[in-house]
Image (cartoon, rainbow, N blue to C red; front, side, top):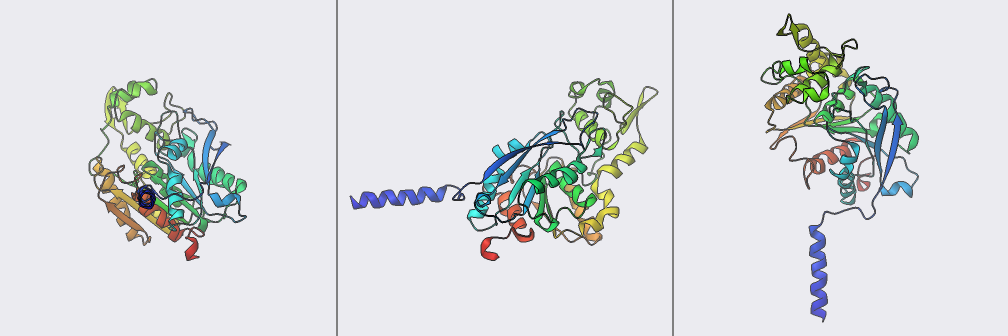
Length: 357
């Protein structure tokens, strides 16, 4: 009988070691709505009502302390709900706290969805003033509703792919709001190896009367969404933007002026001359990217971007890892768990593990 009890106890221990280690008490998820003035009146149908997810650690209900905050910006065709339910981002935070690798923090997943699924994070009345929305609406809302440590030193910012692009852009153009930024495989940092001017089928673009017409070509929706954010033209329906390839007397021609405008407004490497000093205000900055992104231009652009950061004297971490832009992030012991959370534990004021305080 004793042998059976001992065997059963041993099985429980072994089974417990196979499951991911979770916090002893789970935190609470709060749903917020924000009626955005920054997004109101846009021309492409973005709903100004934003649906935000906030994770509060278990200790929030029983303590009176103030907490550092990590803001997460999701990728295109994604949402705050999918971030919490499919990527299970709060679970990563809880396991890190339970292991003593991270202190308790508040986690905010903002709502950056659009009717088209794409968001290039422009800041204009055509596609929405997204930078103003985050800096002037989302952050103040969270600080007003919850017990936050309302300083840049205690605000972290991260995102993947286009969310990573937005994280870098915010740190550059709105300094003093966030103190630690981790950009996971950003796109839009610069040009790739091959020019992309003729990648879309421009005949499809210029013939399109609505968004569904654009879906006849893989790249047409992407380039139109990009143009809506950075080549906006309120007097040019149905998409309210100009294009890098225009029709001139019935012939499609590359428009040098629009190509230049797009590069200077969209590509972050082109904005470093003006905004490098803003990045130097950060407590810490990290950029990573997967070596095997099928669009190799993203890899090339990130390599060039980090070299330019070094040339301007911007202290940062940069890492090219074995993998693509997706397969090493949201897995047990993947980059979110192994790299992102320790980064915030080290550089976000108030987020260090209790034993290190």
